[in-house]
Length: 359
Image (tube, rainbow, N blue to C red; front, side, top):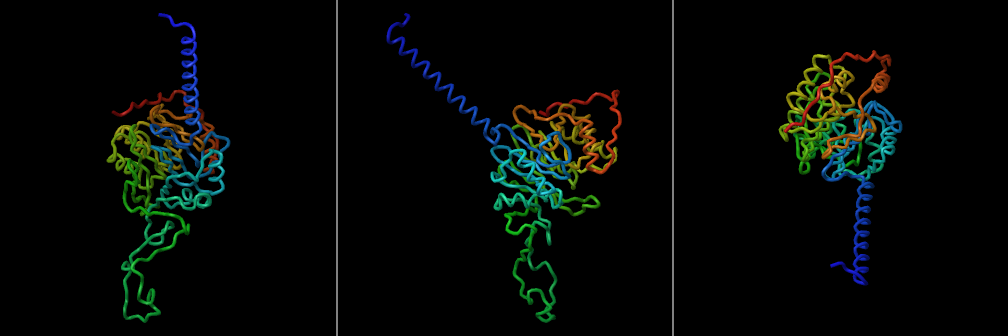
C-alpha cells in the first residue's frame, strides 16, 4: 500500500538525511585518503629522491641514490644521495617529510649514498639508522672487544694502550656523532616482513665492502631495494629468494655501469629467467647498456625509475612512470662526462619481451 500524508513526508526526509550523511562521510574518507602521505596498507610506494636521470623538472640530478619506501604502514628512507643540498632540494620538491620516518637504511659507506645524511640529521636527529658494520674504523662507528689486539706486558705503562688497562670494549667514533646508528653484521629481520640482507663484496676495487639491501615481504611478493649491489645483484636476489621466491620488484643500482655485454646478458637472463622477477626498476649505477637490456627483457614490466618518479605498487601492480627515452640517455651521458651524441634508434630491433607474473 502506498504511504501518504505526514508519515510519508517524514519517511522521505529521514531517507534523504541518511543518504546525505553517507555521502559526507564517504567524501571525508576519500579526502583523508587523498591527503594522507602514507599509502593504503595493501599498497607499496617508492619515491626516487636522488639519481642522475629523470623527467621531473623540479628535481635536481646528481650521481647517487636515495628513495623513500612506504609499505605496510612503514616509512623507510633508503640512502641519502651524495650532496646534502641537492638531497634537501629534492626532498622538498617531492613533498617528503623526513621528520616522519620509522627508520633509515644506509646501504654502504660510499659518499654518493651517505652524503645527504647530514641534512637528514639536521631535521630528524634521533631517527633510527641501520648501517653495515664496517669493523674497526668504519664511518658508521663500531664497537670492538679490546682483546682484538696483541699485548706486550713487558712494555712500560706509557707505551701501552690505555696504560695497559683497556676497557673491555673499545667504542670507536663515527662520522656523525650523536646519530642513532645500529650496526648490522648479518642478515636480520628487523620488523615483521622487513629484512636487511647483509653481504660482503668480493669484487676487485670494492673487496670487503659491506652492504645492506632492504627486503620487504608483501602480499604481492617480495620487494627488494638495493643501493649499489657491490656484492653482486645475483647473490643478493638469491638470498632474497630464500625469504620468498616470489619476487615482485627489484629496484635500485645493480652496479653494472662498466660491465661488458656478456656480463650484462648473463645477469639479465638470471633476473628474468631464473628468478622470474615480476617488475624491474633499475637506477643509479645499473648503467645505460643494462637499462636497455633489461627493458628488452622485461618489456612492460620494466619501470622507469628516474629521480622524482613515484612507483605505486601493490594491488594495481602499476607505476606512475614512463619509458626511458633518448633525452634521458643524453642527460645520463652528460653527467658521466661523455658525449651526448646518440645513435639513431634501430627501428628494426626485435620487439620487447613480455614477462608474466610468477605464480
